[in-house]
Length: 175
Image (tube, rainbow, N blue to C red):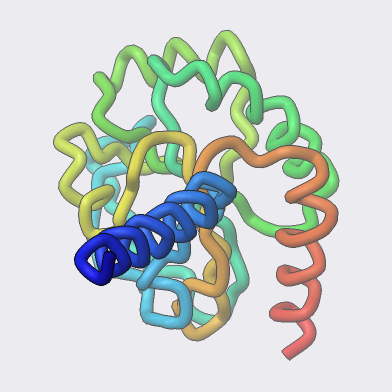
């Protein structure tokens, strides 16, 4: 009888972990980068490859970094939200065209509109790796000191924008 108790207890513990794990939202995976300095990089601009951009250029400003690609369906879904946010001029939105051909990214923007203050091209995806990109789209809120304060995995919804991102941006801008 005792030899069956230990396997039963182990089974119950494993079942409890599975129950809790299956109830988690995969879009809310905590990022180890939140609270740390945004990884440094220098990348060519999408529209003007001879010009470079680095997050160091944004010191003293609160900004969003949206990682997207022309081949990304979820990016297309969130794009109208960024177009509207850009019109409101509440926070600068910088884009990172991820693992994409320059001409494909430019064509996509011509078709859907360009909400970005500036776009860099991470055609090899190396900077995306430094940022812990799981897949596009992903959006980061970066504060005046260059610290990542929030990471949205997957598309930004109106609810996430109004309840998480914009209140955080407003708070960070007031500091």
